Image (tube, rainbow, N blue to C red; front, top):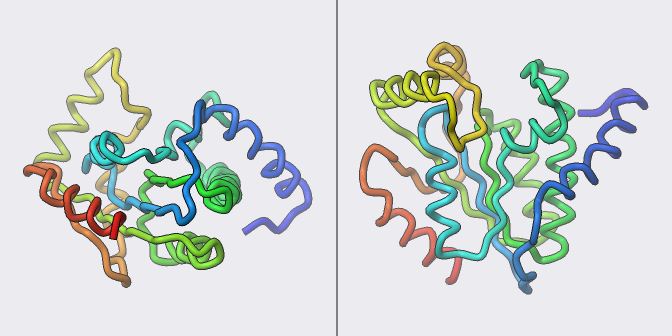
Length: 200
């Protein structure tokens, strides 16, 4: 929540920067869907989002990429995250109001933070789809260790195994109906279910 004038001014300036980084937007629709993806680092959120967007004309808003648009050398501090997500929420509401279907790729671990997204969905009258992305801890550890060794990689996350361990206790169960997907298994059946739910 923004409490100081300086923070509010910063966020207002941040939104156009985020919009400029998005590239070409998908075609607007009468009633867009809003897919909110939650999950710990290394569980495969970005992989899942890319797979889902292969068959659906959705814009992916990836928090890690958007963070690096605003902050060249992210500190991942609470203040930085508050500023980032305040700007993301404004951008999400604006895009959904314009009929742009969205996938929001972020950890979204607390129900309190997800409530803000629920409110935006209610306010804009869009179809809300919630997805919890999971993977066994041993798989996540291997992925994050491999990521650490890769000099050139496509994903934007800097999270390591220690970050996963620190964040895991903060992960809260989603209180609304949601789809659960384990990325250590075949994710195609869950993607099919989500596609049907969106097109229904």
